[in-house]
Amino acid sequence: MARILVVEDEAMLLMLASIVLEDHGFEVLSAANGRKGLELARREHVDVIVTDFMMPEMDGIAMLSALREEGHSAPAIMTTAIPRSQLPRGDEALFDLYMPKPYNEEILAQSIGEMLARNQARGDDAG
Image (cartoon, rainbow, N blue to C red; front, side, top):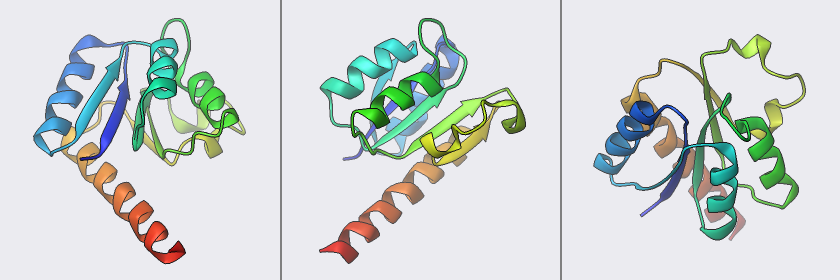
């Protein structure tokens, strides 16, 4: 079962995303801000990270940057109400998919499934 880390400071969005992803058979770890998400990702193996951009304590870009510097390579989805053109320049390499808010949770689950399938195919090709 794939483990998905969802980092979101809006409690209702965090709960809704978690429920939908669990309904799709994913194990969900959740955090209410980037600092807690960073701590969870350091402690637990995660297959995909879904993170909001703007959050208290640590934003999603800072969290992903810290994880990438530590060698974490799990694919990431950035969710935000901010237009992609207004995200900090040069940080696009930190995440694999930009998903504007409000997003459809079913599309989120489908996108995660596609990411996992691509990673599995890459792993099969390498072996």
